[in-house]
Image (tube, rainbow, N blue to C red; front, side):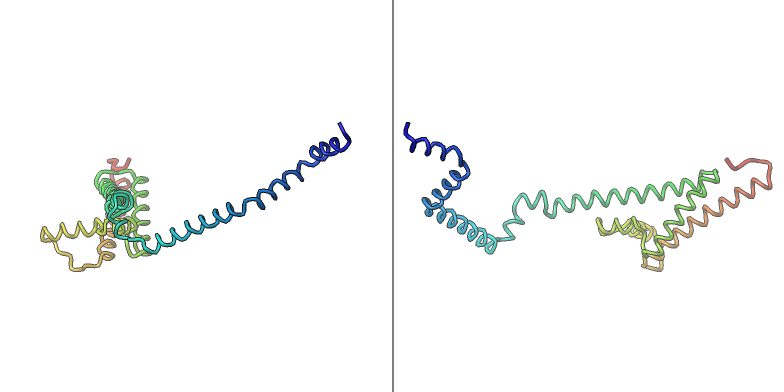
Length: 200
């Protein structure tokens, strides 16, 4: 081997970074047409997307199955009925438990807990001018349990003179609070003045 060949081999092996940069330079200088074509393709795609966005027909999207069954009115109504039914059931369960507490429970600590729950409900009703559960029912069902109860009572001939839901709710809460508080007072009196044990 000659000395010139040895120097060439050493130069090739000693500087791989220079070799890679020189290769990239050769590629960039050798294929300017490919770069121009890729830029033109990206510009064409951008123009197509802009045209599609400008000429987008919203009615076609609303008539599609995707809109109808996944994000459209039907799906929203199903979800609203589901959420509204949940809040309606929760509201009914609270009312039934308070009714059971008034009628059948003689444990003073349980009655005090019920009185506290009713007091919290009254406080939220005064602050929000509506029951929180009724607000959620109105949000999802556009009609609360109070309105259905009013319609039912009016169909029976029991007429409320007011249409203000806030006053009607407050009246029901005050009546329930008075019943529970009165029951607590009566049980305390019976415990102190009689030999019979009414209190658990």
